[in-house]
Image (cartoon, rainbow, N blue to C red; front, side):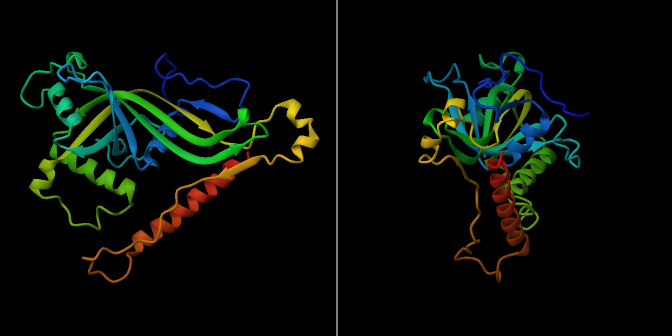
Length: 279
């Protein structure tokens, strides 16, 4: 069970820049990829143009999403294979394209990009930025980061139970316990207006840099230059601000689950960025 992940292929193999930056690594395990996806608030999802569109360009969209082990909804093991749920407007172009590809609109799957009804081919990208790495020379400057790219086919979720599961999961992945502390379940109008995509992941990989500077041996021998050029890492991390009540809010104070999440997540993000900066 240990180190389960995706096999290397022409699609997902990472260029590791061998020999130039020892702190940069390519990873293919489920745990790394799923964690990056679930800790990234906004995912970027790209898909090819439809043969029916007068548009030669591929499309990329920012979307909310997260991984899931559905239908085993209680299993939260990121080291095993998972799917990705994406949330968007039911009338969005991607939703309509996928619905047609799945035949969920009553038609047969016809898109050139979706042979045999496999769904819409998509690429999902997620990135966490952890710091700027300033070496002695700009050529060796870098960044600490965690990034992943996943390849798979998207399908419209039509089952009511799975749709509600995905909506709650995506909501709580963004802000823990928010679904339970909101006006739920959604109304029929809200459900109709909301589109949920289920992406079956076929391949993925992650590129991660965590560490201090990587310097050339020649530069390290130049003490005069090292005496005037600062090198090191400037950590970077996401910080949530103090919750601001809406003008229509009638509750007193900030709910405990929000205060706890903001405090814990801020501390975790700061600690991680400083830890990886040390190398």
